[in-house]
Image 1 (cartoon, one colour):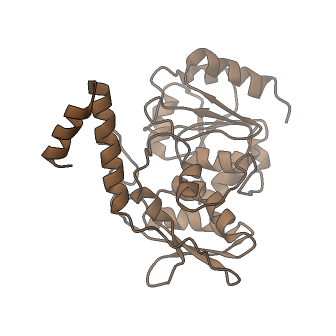
Image 2: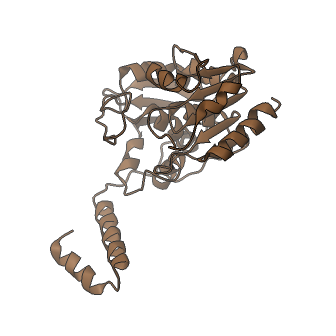
Image 3: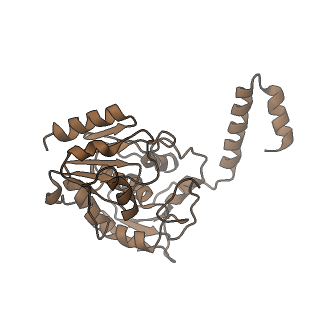
Amino acid sequence: MNVFKKLWFKAKADSPAEYKFLKHTERYLEKLKKINPPDLNFPAGRGIHFKHSGNCGDIIYAIPAMKAIARDQDIHLHLFLNRPADYAKHFKHPLGNVTLNQKMFEMLQPLVLSQPQFKECAILQEQKTDIDLDIMRDYPLLLDRGNIARWYFLVFPGNYDLNKAWLQAEPDKDMQDAIVLARSLRYQAPNIDYRILKRYSKVYFVGITEEFEAMKKYIPHLIYRPVKDFLEMASVIAGAKLFIGNQSFPFSLAEALKVNRMLEVYFECPNVTVYGENGFDFSFQPQFEKLIRMRYENCDR
């Protein structure tokens, strides 16, 4: 935005708030003009090839859009690795400065290929793709709020009922009486105290060991549940009597599976939303404790 336009906005605005609004609107329109819109005539009859380079959680939340676009066709997913990421400096991300790497691809692939409609999950090299799901991030959307799963529908018209499950996994029967917990080092509600879970005997943790060690300080008997891949993680979550997680990858699995789940919502970035039955969210301690009693102590499977 050039200086002349700013001066014009200042002259036009009746208040600082209106001036700010005019500036934000102009920046939105300027960014929109730079976008080359995708082809919205989706192919039919031969399967659809999608490209994605985001975090594993973003990929899980993109599946409803893939299903809506593909309808009854086969889905071929091509993942671009090592795209640079612009993570907030005050948060530590397990992948460092990329969105998806070889290890995460290898963990994710078995889960994707276990889903009925997916015929391929491969590293993007020179394959031709039909739909680039990454283009969603080029649009001037406020990606720190709303619902990740709905972002894609703003770019690729369609709909999927997010009240319904979009992943399947065989429940791990060893988890049937357990609370399964995941809590990343990012997106932690600052007033939530997990020491309440000390009163329950079967509490397992899924995630990276650094996250586990951080939570074990508050729940000394917490049990680490390693997994060989994300299909196994989905099975553990599907088998749990209750899953509790913050806005991290394991919760995307819980949401997609529609298990009995509780979401810890981070107040500065509420971009994960619970839809459908068995889903609850919290940001404050009394409500957190009440939900645990409701969904674990007093909930029959």
